[in-house]
Structures are given as C-alpha cells and as structure tokens.
Length: 354
Image (tube, rainbow, N blue to C red; front, side):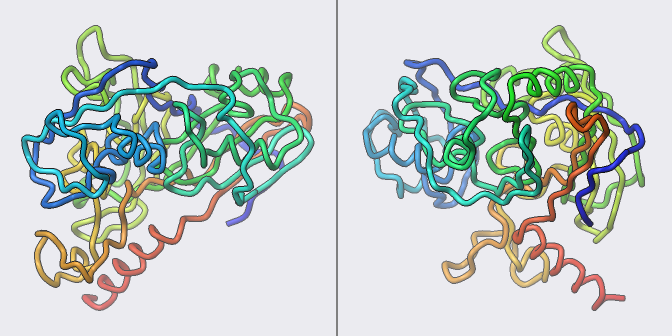
C-alpha cells in the first residue's frame, strides 16, 4: 500500500467531513448521564462526548471549576453515575493562545503547495476554545513556514476535518490559491475518500448504498441522527465488506456527501455501529476478552486495560486533483496500532476456529 502521484481514474466523490463547530463563548452545556458507565472517569466521559475539544483542554476546565456535577465542582477522576447532570461553561477563544508547538507529524507527502499527514487518534484538528493546545494546527504552525489562511486564523491550512478520535490521512494546504481550488473540488464532490471501519455484528450484504438524511439530534445537541423531516439533509454512503469475523465486520466506507458524523450515524442506522464509538454505540471501549471470549462485557478488572478506547474509524485514502501538478493524485495512511492490534486478535481467533 503506497501513496501515488500519478493519473487516477474517476471515483465516487465526497465532501469534507465536518465536526460540529465550537460552541459560542459563554454557552453552558448540560449533559445528563443516561446509562451506567460503571465508574468511568469524568474527564474520559467528557472527552468521548465532546470531540471538538482535546482531553487536556477538558481537564483544564475541570481544574478551573468550569465543569460541575449536580452543581458541585469535582475532580477529573470523579466517577460518574447514571442520573448525574454535568454542566460545562464554554470559555472565550483568544488569539494569543494559538501558538506553534513542536508536535511530531507523520508526513505522508509534502511539496511547496500542500501536504498530506496521517493524523493520530486523540488529536483535535484545530483550536476550538481558549487554552487549546496540542491540535494539528498548532503542529502545522511549527512545521510550516506558510499555511493558507482561507479557512480563518484558527484553521490555518485546514480544508477538511476529521473527528478527534478518527485517525487517518488529512490534506493540508499552504497556498491560498491552491486552497480555493481544492475547496471547490470538495464542494463539487470530486474529491474521493475511503475510510476503514470495524463495526459491530455480521453485516448482511457484501456491499450497499446507504441513503438516509442526517440532521442534528432533536434532544442531544452533541449528536447527529437520521432525520426524515425538514431538519435532515441528503446523505449517501457506500460500503463494502472487507473481512468478516462473525460478531464484528471490517468495512470500507466511501461517503459521497460530507455530513457531520455521517459514517458513524449511517452505520448505526443499519444496525452495525462502529466499535467503541462512545456517541453511537452501547460501549465506548473494547477489551481483549470481548474477542477471546474470556469473561463478560461487564466492567474489566483494573489490571486489564482496554485495547481500543476510541471509535474504530480510519481515513484510509484520499484522491483529488493537484492544481499545480495538473493531475489526480492519491495518498494512503496505514491503519494505526490500536486498530491493527484488534484485527490481529480477530484474525487469530478466526484462524483457530477454522
């Protein structure tokens, strides 16, 4: 699997996936814990629900007293319970806090006009509130002498986005002129993207096209949902089964539109949510024993850490027209270690049973 700078055939097109934009300064969010997370830490719960923000930022808010449980300030290690009401005050974004940071980048390709990076899980793409650090933009500001400003001060070089806990290939633009050209490609749906996802259950069809409108969830402002009313917008995803494991399936998904959380919502809608997706699945992590069959799905012992603590979704490939080289180019990002570890266990189990 290698990245290629060569002529490519035309593929189904996509628009950029977009995270919900940062909430306005002064907004107070209220979250009700609706199921028993069996002692899950407050900071981990918030990180799973609020993927616009980094874990370090949320931990800082907790330390500063901007997060309360049942109107009481608590520590990041507080164990949440079903019925808890969590309130969080969104602070003001201040420009002086956006600084270059020497954060290692996994660079797939780079030239004078653009670059492709393999974004790791647990990295926010761009700042969303004051004290925000550790984002991809912070790393890019350190690495690059220039970045496009077409997306605004806090989105330097950014032409599309991934959820914080979605890993994979991202396109970064250095020139404003190139940014405008590539942005038009996204708008016209001539950019092709492929994702790899591990989902729950045995997917019935080998391939299918999911056409279900997506809009904001009527009750949970942090989530999206299938909406057949005026609140829903056209959304289309094509999936192909790559490997079956009985209780899990590895699929390739090609979104043809770019709605927020589109792949995650569509896979849930067809009865196969992405593994360890805290927002759209009944479990937010995966243990080795869930695969090997040792024990149950109840709370794991302290000496058995999860093997996956984020949604098993990876942006595997992107293809677009390079406006300077005047040809379509394709780039790939290998699966990260956590997803590879899970697949290794699943393949080992499958081999032992055959």
